[in-house]
Image (cartoon, rainbow, N blue to C red):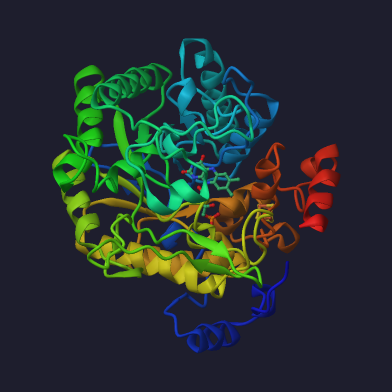
Length: 482
Ligand SMILES: Cc1cc2nc3c(=O)[nH]c(=O)nc-3n(C[C@H](O)[C@H](O)[C@H](O)COP(=O)(O)O)c2cc1C
Ligand code: SF4
């Protein structure tokens, strides 16, 4: 699959980058010069209200590898990725990767779990990350590490890689159809939700005992936490009103506060969403249409029901107010879902094998991420806000990142895919080293194509470790067939 947008590597100087973004009609500001040293914006520490200091403005976003054991423990692949997170130089490690609180909530049969029998493995991940960071950067008192807790809900595949075993909160007219959800599948009952809340609290207590500084109560990407936020049509105490749709989150927070009051809490949230996209006859992604009897699309948290491809922030602002009132300072802003609108969450030049050609220049998606985060940060200046979606900027990531931090559009530059191909990018930027161009993520999407086809994830095109693995040939063949 190919597309005709200009590749970032061709935008070699500030003028061409500026002209290109202006021609796209997007606002994507950047600094022309990268600052180095103690006064550099990206090198500034951030003091949390709990007194903990985060040593710089780079955040490693959670990145799972579909490479745990069948009973949810990490493997050498997992450990290598976490060591790379530690070697990156970033001082905020947001969650490491999605860790299911129990078996039926795993997104794949190789997802990590947090249960009694996996604690040794999770401990090893955290302590190894800390040790390598200490070794390379000489301090860890300003390193802040969380664990991302999840239940995969509608996208659970706990037993067989190809078999969805969804746990849903309501029937969604488009997603049910696209993902083959049985129209008679019972939704999770309120009592089942209450049991699940207890599992989150138990998991948070275990994470705290392992030494994690905070847990992320994942509310993004179509998984269960996110589905609560859009449960407009669900009856009962977990659906309908904003108050009810956020009850799951509030009850977990209350449970954690009473069990482990000193544990930090963060929330990664899909701060806006759009309808699902599917490929058209030319393989280009197109939004699927659904309108209720009032002519609205009422299923996207942070979307405008009257204009389904537009953002409406009133509920996201209400969520921020609520988090503030719960004394939650750390918020990580993502959007959409990798399952039904991947170009929104992960702007990419090359789509994954089960995806579609981008319906917009991927830079439009990056600008949407960045300006959305800035609009939220502007209204909540006291919250510690992490932005996402920077990897597609490639060579321009550091200069756009510096601008956004310097101008308080965001507090932390979140890095996802780039850390798979080029883990040391944050350290190189902070040290003023030239970028290793051959290791810059070019958004080939192999790290998504591989797991979509039952293989472990990794940067097959650019990371020598994965390049040399037998799976690399398989990924090439899959792409050739696509
Ligand atoms: C292979 C892969 C695994 C991911 N795993 C997770 C995850 O476990 N939890 C999560 O919140 N996001 C996950 N994401 C999304 C990233 O954290 C990030 O939001 C996304 O890649 C966009 O940021 P980027 O442009 O820097 O890559 C994953 C993305 C990729 C490509
Ligand atoms: S496979 Fe490598 S280059 Fe491709 S998107 Fe993933 S990290 Fe980037």
